[in-house]
Picture 1 (cartoon, rainbow, N blue to C red):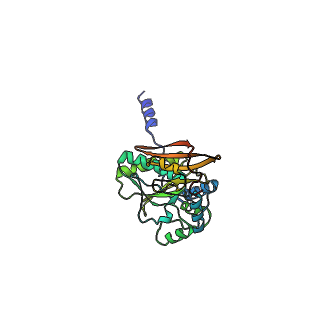
Picture 2 (picture 1 turned 90 degrees about the horizontal axis):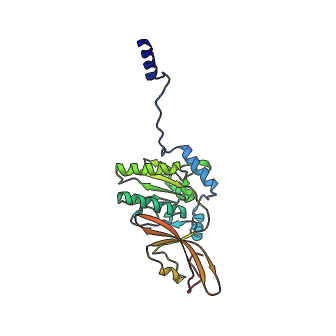
Picture 3 (picture 1 turned 120 degrees about the horizontal axis):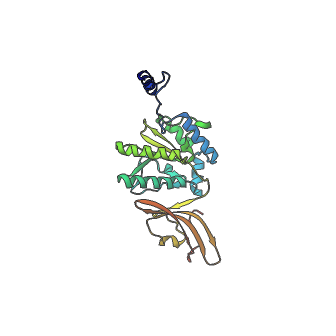
Length: 268
């Protein structure tokens, strides 16, 4: 009986000689495969890689919008003004992420890189060791699409860094983003998925359309995405998606109105 018991216990606690510890895989580790996934996604979504001429064109059409800033979301002062633009979906993503971060930590997130052109990327390669070096193919920088931002890690505590890592890893598992934690430049590199390359225009308090007096009657804390309008002989019906900056969260709603004063909207 004792012999049988000893055999059973030895089988329960025996570890096969070939067994190896499970290797931890960092979901935010930068790899060539991650860069290739970003380029594959950009191709799936038909996102143009930008040069300086295309950058100007997409700004005019509204396919690229100025990054909105508030007490939860800041822009690094060193980032040139002409490159403080992103796709509209990226702006919405960053407003929500920064709102969540601010609600938890009462601190702001800071963007220090957004859209880039091929010319700007070539310039960065001379000083930034993390800048993608490929000029074509599946290893180009996703910043060239306008769908990517870098969030500075400088000033974050260990707890705040861990909160960001968990948040970004969860969003990556959901297929909403591709994120990389960089160390040489100390940033979180994030490409946002689900970009629809169509025309948008975004107006903020300091950037309201001069035509269309209706917009001056909207509350000043609103940011809104222009979507469409329908005009009759006397009035126009404006439909816009509104981003309401209401702490601790940012919500989206649709407003429909028929202004009596004007049929014109800036950037049309």
